[in-house]
Image (cartoon, rainbow, N blue to C red; front, side, top):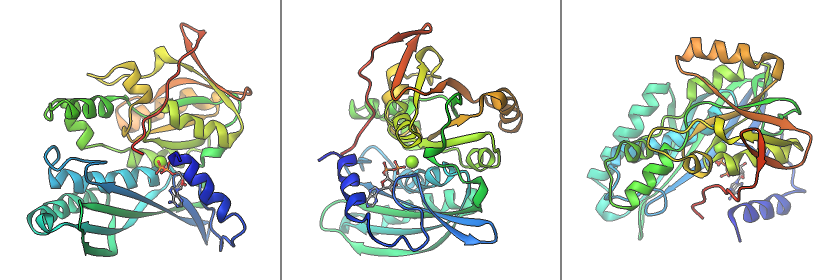
Length: 312
Ligand code: ADP
Ligand code: MG
């Protein structure tokens, strides 16, 4: 079964259960309105040795930062601010002391950078490799929350930064080149935490998510849940230094934002973003009434069998 097939079966199995006030499975985070016009959002991600990192190719400090970063990225993707995390670790004997200490130093440094509290978790021995689970919680005005399902026909589709460096870096690491600039980016992603909350406050931003599997895969989640299609100009996809266009469209783990904006306000939003964050956002296409994702090259349709990245 594929990862998404498994998740679909979970959604079906629990379809008739009470949700207890939560907006459940399917977005970057689950949403719980808590009164006073505010909501909490919740997300969890696993980081597994030899699946998500190689101990010989990533420092414990880097794994600590990245474990948190990937979760904060999902909170930012909802348009709100991360406030707390719950951290669970399963550690084999040979990682219980020095590795664990360095891991926590990294986790702490990123927690401090974004003012995120660590409020609990669990610690256990592992008979196999290292497994890390982080649950992140965010909070913000309910009206500010951005769902994947809110894309509207005519919206301009933006990505929040250059893409593909992480995918190129993973390729370098697997070929034994662990110290290329792209490999360093792969181990040290910079999710758009402040950018997410800022975009959340803008009502012209409709759908938003973070890019963890590449736009070729992730954009389809916005299209499917919004019941729309899209045209994407592949010449406009911002390709990071050292990456290929295919890395930028299909590579995993960039952790940048993907969002759709009402066309009439897109230019102003891009100007305001540049003033605030000193780097541009990049329009790559538009949402259409068709049901499919159409790639364009030089404004002409082109067929590509691009798929996203998967660990599973
Ligand atoms: P993301 O890449 O944003 O972390 P995923 O692709 O991992 O999202 O997951 C898609 C959706 O499925 C999310 O809403 C997530 O919470 C949910 N999900 C994934 N795995 C499980 C699981 N084992 N049980 C319940 N929900 C899950
Ligand atoms: Mg996500």
